[in-house]
Image (cartoon, rainbow, N blue to C red; front, side, top):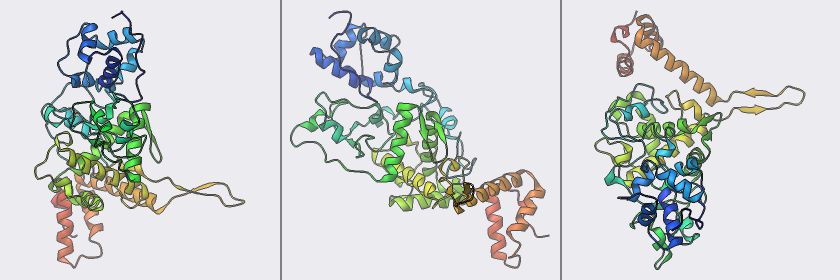
Length: 389
């Protein structure tokens, strides 16, 4: 072969590196391994290229194809650091670092820190790799059919182009081409608006580096951590949730799935089965939709990112003005309540005033008093405040 590859297809938007290499190799009637050997590399596993290619591999590809190095990097997981994940090397403390930066449904500090050995955000364990593809993308392309990097990791439920579910297949990585043959691939299954909205945002984060939320434009890195935080909260055992556990329970009830996707023992999202990952992502989409519609108010400081836009009314003869909706007012009330709770945890005088307020109209009811005391204990407010003056 020559030093350059004059015949090669352009990479598709969001395409994974090994998918592109497979299509290049097909033009020359060789394998991806042969292609890599031609530029001086011996491959052991295709999946390694999609995560982190060996040093110098992408530079050689760029010189052979004329494609920019940065463009090829984006076709790998490592090329999406530190946005998608902090670092490509697994680490025991990486889990807490990544999933505790934000809070959405649960107040900050409710979830305990966890040590997860060899963990990387979004990247399944070796035994957890599952191959997925969009039925319509597959049937509308010519074998060898390209596949997207987002199909390799459990980031999305649907295709951002066709709005149908990404389906599992039993073939080797990238060989969903067999859907072209009899009896054919699965029928496309459309998704609801909540999933479609969530996945569109994830796709924009991957391809543009930013996401438009109801009131804020956020960086892709913020979006991925926001989504991963929400998944973590939805998998948190009730014993850690405290009073806010009613929110996670309500979200799961709305989905119709089992609470915590039926987990009996806590595991990080990346180690869940494909069915449990699917149910948890659906729960995250449900939670986002409910917060944006104002039917659910999260108790984390990141919940404000999903507040619906304020109502803007224009009265003839009057200047344009912004009218706060009841949802916004309730969110402000919740923010104030969170601030009071935080102060009461550290200041005995504030704790006593808070207890007096919560029991002002029911001081003759022992059950109410005990319930408030229990709530204070769950919130971490010292028990010394739980008396009547």
